[in-house]
Length: 309
Image 1 (tube, rainbow, N blue to C red):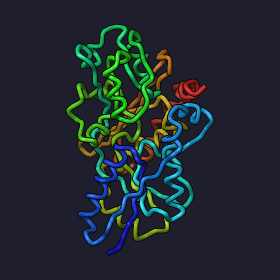
Image 2: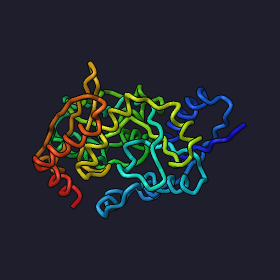
Image 3: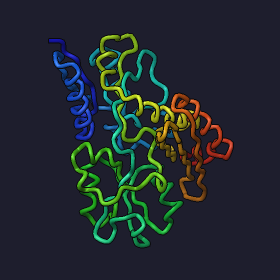
Image 4: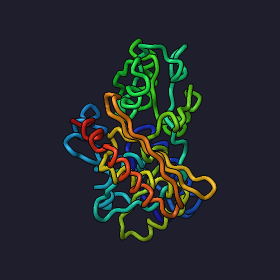
């Protein structure tokens, strides 16, 4: 029996995602043995320094060591949260498969009386470490107190048991994949808060010359998800922004038309730029690039750069 080694981070969420991927791959390749190998990344070891790393221009702090293992042939396929992948990949690697996306929305989880964003009382303490979410909250609810909150999903959920937080905001996908959907109090709709580009999606990365494992990974590729993700990531790339920028993007397809909405906010909440474009899903990359150009013309670059000063 042929063995394929799948590389991933070692967090509970990363392992849950990877086990889901392996189960889907096993359905398509029943005669193949899939082995999971966990790899510690710079982001795992230096969580407190993530913003400083981004300001220095460091990229790929959640994926660099996994990609090095892939290039070194210590693993055959890497599984990533797509939003963690830089828009430019190392030479010799490619995204060979994007499985069907789960819910892209952000969610709110709160204490009694703080179960919905609109119901949070003035002065409520909301936990998040996301630059995007901070910018949104400061623009839409300047009466709230934003408190940094880092760590894995279980650590963040446990923070609600302390006096330091009245509510927290997380990605729906992480809770769904770790079978904790019941913890969600409110799904925050994209017309209120746009998700991070690629949020809720996974990426299977391979060596560009590894035809056999490219074929293995591609067996669970979802074309509809790929179109939407491509539009979002081309928008992010066109802005010249990274995964820690105050940028949101969400693409949908309805009636054969792809609609992409983008959002960029000042970290202090003083200014927000929001725009939408639509067209043929086959033109998804061009739509993302065009929306980025439109928003750059409205001053988006200044907001992005100011957030990382």
